[in-house]
Image (cartoon, rainbow, N blue to C red; front, side):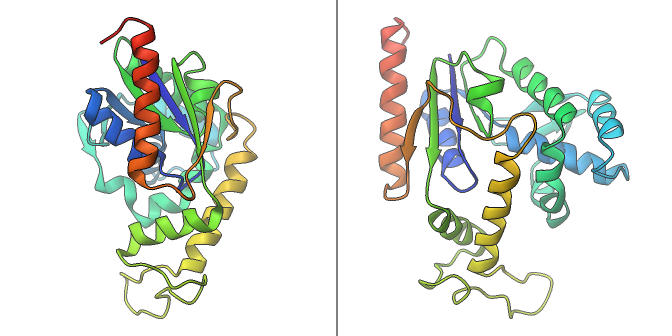
Length: 239
């Protein structure tokens, strides 16, 4: 069974997909982590992210697999903390916007998922990677809500009510945490990149169920997605 979830950054799709995968014993695939692995490879090999031809050739030279905890396995090496470095953060959106790279990564995802029960999330999972998925969701939330969620993830603290007032941009040292305003700007920039891609642009599939998570708890979103999966699975006579 294939379950596909799309949505913009910070909408909660990664959290929900991981929870569903754990509950149902599905393989969880975060397409964004695969693009992060490609970005990491580019950095390690000194390849400019703007060099689409060499970057695509680099992807073809390596074997990729995915682990249930979100680690990407590249030629037997597990990458997890390496995927979340500032250097990778700085180029992953641009790397993922290269059409030839997207084609290669999409093929990798399909190969990993073949013959398995999978829940996969990303930006074009429902429209390009798994257009025939039995269950499709498009999760969304207002930009300011998504920014607050990301801020909490990155800093471990709640922001003040107004962007720019709750951040810690004045902190010194390499571990400086972003301000809420910075996180919101990053969210808006990522939205513009994701919706403007020539290939694999972020958009809702016609047959995907739209769910605005702005006013919902994680438990409420989980329940809606989980129940939909069970309904479809039972309708197909699966256990």
